Length: 242
Image (cartoon, rainbow, N blue to C red; front, side, top):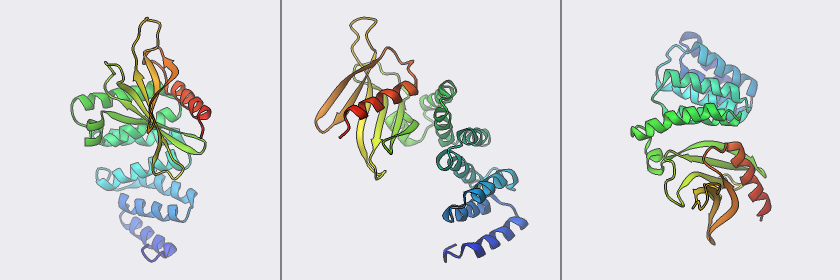
């Protein structure tokens, strides 16, 4: 692999698998097919590895689950398959919280918002039990969705704590620039002052170098779906396109 002699490397890995089908070998085999852009054999390797790996409780099998789930989610957009892999992964590794996050994204990608919210509620429980990784505890939120606009990615984070005070956010939405490396625009879905019960409880705001902008778009309460949010964010981006 180091010498980029991929076909001889595959021959050696296949010999290793025939003697001892370890998840590590399937991970490396799939990596080679990824480099060769051979999606069919990459997928075949993941399926064989998940089924045949000799040890299913080590770090390499966990890596295999993550890579296979990401293959179906990000590369070929087979969200139902990605969902199943992450769900099975949680069964095998219930303390690997990254799998819950990935499962939520796979569910939301299919507009399975109710199911995704149930998994999010599990993560919320882990948050209040102080079990989550440092970043989740520090920022008090979780990545729950990503979608595209104008060939750019938009990432959505949901707060574990429901806003109680004005200007506190229930969602944070980031438009990533075309390089995929920097945040181009940042939106908050903030709690606002309700004078009448019929007034919106949450509004879309934007943070920029120019200050804090509040858009005339609101949600009556926190029951709005991610589909509602996607639509409104896209409308704002279209109207304010630079």
